[in-house]
Length: 516
Image (cartoon, rainbow, N blue to C red; front, top):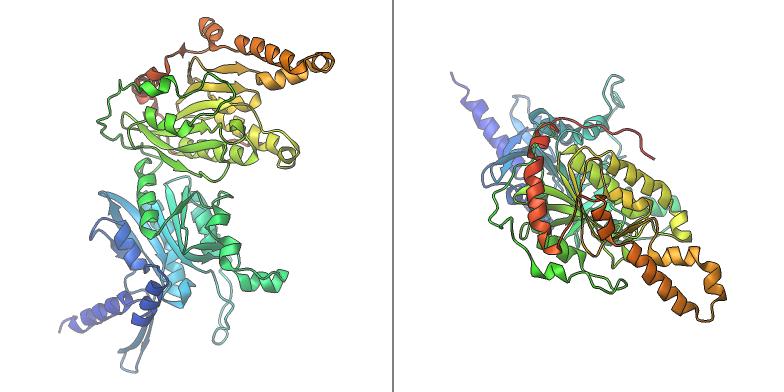
């Protein structure tokens, strides 16, 4: 006697599970320009590294002799694998079965994905495509609802964000609970042409609100790239996987660890000549902040997040001498770099992300202040801006601030932290108000009575601009140093070495107090 019959049964069930929804369903998925969940996992992970959990989870029908006559696999696939040898947890809906709407075993496996990442303290990657529950009538009576003692399903999702990096990709239509999972991520990316993210689909919107709208109009990439639901947009699925791999490369596996310091062949003493002239002498002319950041950081290491949301502020990761760095910078080509409500929320969340995973922050500052005007007041800019300032000044990771040009008003405080290292360029201007606004307010009557108001305005602005020079502040030791712009990379690489002993003490979970 042996267990050969049962072993063969396991083999048949595994084969049936790997068949997913069948040949026709897989062909239909491909016809829509989308991969299956198993193809996605194989494209994301190192070759042959996926270790699936619950390989025969599903629903089997048996005859009177106990032989399997039909088998429907769980429509959620999850397990462990590696990316460049580093272990991760991964999971996603199988859209070829019930359109990804969870069957009983699929639901259990989707809930288990968070538990898996938490148990092994590894990053979680979600590859999302499908809906939430169904109102289809079930068979018979039976129990309904969840047990009274069951923990809230969202609890593990929320807790996980304080433990390990979570990255989610929307790769097709995503609605209901999977859409909430997408939002509950440190990094979220959706494909431009094939993904839509919806609280509820067009049919429900039409029924509830009498609004006829397509899935793309309701929750396509153009919608969610501008509201911070999707941090980034990918041209296709392979690009989405590449972005997830890039994002995770800057982060540790969990909060009890530090990001791995990569080897770098970029010289720490590299000084780019172009930095000397990148900021125009004419104060009213803009410059390219992204180009500046790229010239200072390790070559080709800058990974931007949230480019289409809060566009006056730039956030992303980069490396300095191999060290993972969080980058915050103003884009003076958008509202002169002013901090609006959306930019403030973007910056606050990014600071909290860096604090959670112990990533030092470098600020390239060109801040004219909070965005002003009626729209700004309606948006509650002062509330969200103050929250960003609170996040900055209470940040626990090391900070370095390079005042490139403007640093004005309360908003400027969002670019500095306790014990931060502060450098200023010769182009830096600092004060309570930008010169133009200060002249307009303080000399309003004189300008109104002047025979040549524009001439007087120009003279006053020139006089006050001279008073905002960084040289007196450097001479008074109000900044740590004023530097030749070409010295920025060497100075920051030196700072990276200084902070190494501090990083070890940051390991472990971090908490935040109440913020406005």
